[in-house]
Length: 307
Length: 275
Image (cartoon, rainbow over all chains, first blue to last red; front, side, top):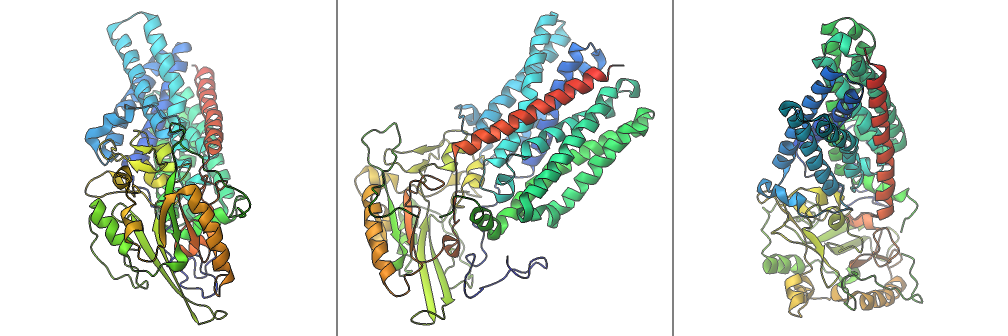
């Protein structure tokens, strides 16, 4: 470990055994813009909402179903816009559907999002046009089944990179993302549903937050010193934010949110904010991790297949 | 790198090119003189845009890294070695895209813009790339990069156009000491084994090693490998880069369980929460 860590200094030229090339990064920092973590949040929330709509349809909770479906549809419409604006060549966005590439999580995810959005639009159309139950049911089932994939594939996308803080957590990130998606979907429904119909939403907030925070805790422990970005700089601040906001949101949902509409709205917003901050923390951590070659070298030197 | 000279290394070929010969680079850094002719020749031939020069203070290296606008990069390491024949040890090395056997950039590219050529090299089709930036984070070597003013990703093509007409890449052609050698990868690997033995026997050669010559390493070996005089990280390269399909499968396995938990918790919450 380089001395001077923690006060922003980098150890320069340890004479005997240099561990880096002038402290320059080995891997590139992410080329992605802020739209990408926001997409992780919007798309993930939308995925869990579609599953909630499907479940509400089965249990004949008509208002909840409609609300969840429309929120999911809004997310499914915002998502491609976020992704397209991140591209270096936005006019070529259709190239995403040029091939199906099983080895590319981004390719599979693009196809999932396309199918997911279409199914939700079909479900909405069936409702508005008063089409037979079977049509709306099939569309709802399709969207509700693709939803969990949409919520978690983004974690595989990050894990399948050379970025140390993402790659080393590749088996835990999916749980962080799925938990966070459920919590945010519950939060969105808490905000938009009356208190006596929002019990499913409150349960989602609590279950989602429990999974999200447990998985995040496990991830930080597993990462060891590779997880330092989560306690330093912008990613560290966002991490504090996400934890505070998510836990508060769940606490409100469990207590005051059962009686007071105002509290339920506040709790829902806290859950949504926590989920968004979590994706932003993970995104920023990727920049901090890529900036320091120590993370690349230490991560690989401790791995079994060393040269 | 454990391949002994007795073991014949076989180079996996792209399966759609039976009978093709995989071509590559062997960069022997022990005879690099740091002239940067490779950097210049590459820029000239490939029309790679210039970069505003800045004085880095890092020895003679003002290029600093590989990137969209630097497809060859000569590293300069100056350091004091109290045990050596003279106090100063000066390492120079011309870095380049590794054209990995299992190329992460190619595998993650969602548009199919990055492909494997008939020479076994990895090339970006600039008329297909939509600048999604996934390859940038996927490359374990920090090679490929999005060009800021253009939006698309660029990297070394191993002079695909020159190979097509039977010529060698511009950097190898310009290299005055033959530190950069171009040829069929199997031949280069054999030659490198011999060269390694020579260098190890010389003063200051105790740290010599081949980097990326072993087809059993994390990326299945490099199409452009190196003889280094010290650990890879000293030159700014990762010590044990890895890209494996197995890792991708286990990740999807974890994601499937996570997705199942999502579905289960939502179904449970909506079912139990019925007013």
